[in-house]
Image (cartoon, rainbow, N blue to C red; front, side, top):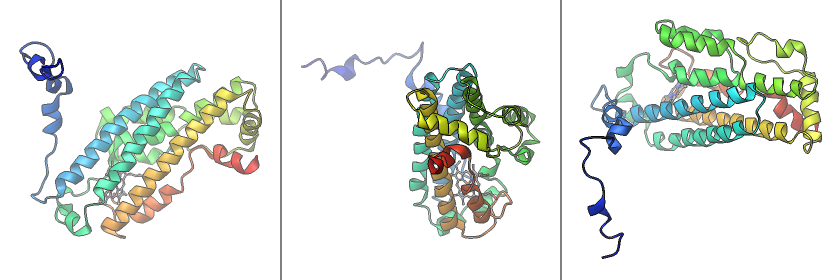
Length: 277
Ligand code: HEM
């Protein structure tokens, strides 16, 4: 018998003390979190995709926060690894639509009325990601007024500099011209494009050897926005093929609202620089 053939016999089997796989992962808790409200076959898929998405969002928030803490200290290399992980996690989020799309409108209608006004619109982790990436809108705090434990931290992210704001501070720290009004703007509001900032990025993109780290960081930010757009677009298409032009459970116009969200630009000068180069 080879070493490998008896591997199962040698495996650890006594877990009266210490961690087992299940206890380390809190697997019982995780698997007891699916509570379909109906007997409809597809409701489990619907619940599960949302829950899996929230887990990925949890990781994305964790990585973005860590990357931003380092950027705030002027460190540009370590955050790249974290942002790369964000990009990979976004790909997983976007892949989830492929599974969800196996649910037809008829399947969805079997359980739609059961969850009332619940909607991803009320996802506080998604809203945290939006705020961290700079899509600021104080109105989005409102659905969380009944949860001070959520509202408080979300309001803090709203008022804090976004990933792009921190990146622009780095440009300024490297001697590039970034207006004071941009560096000290009202962070609760979305960023508005600025010609001087575009010029600063042009300098970076025209001399990539000198500004290699900023250039690499900019391209990583673009990867994040690119993937965010893909997620939004896949959401939009999945919603349209599932509910058509009906209003959303969260109370918005539905597809119309989501279509406008696809137009959002997070890092405007990083797109504009392509035209100007
Ligand atoms: C067939 C499945 C789905 C339908 C029909 C659907 C429908 C909608 C609609 C109509 C909205 C607009 C807000 C509203 O009025 O409700 C919305 C927003 C949202 N949904 Fe979905 N959704 C689906 C799946 C998902 C999944 C799997 C996620 C993953 C977390 C998700 C996350 C979100 C988020 C984060 C928003 C807010 C977007 C924003 O404010 O820009 N949705 N959804």
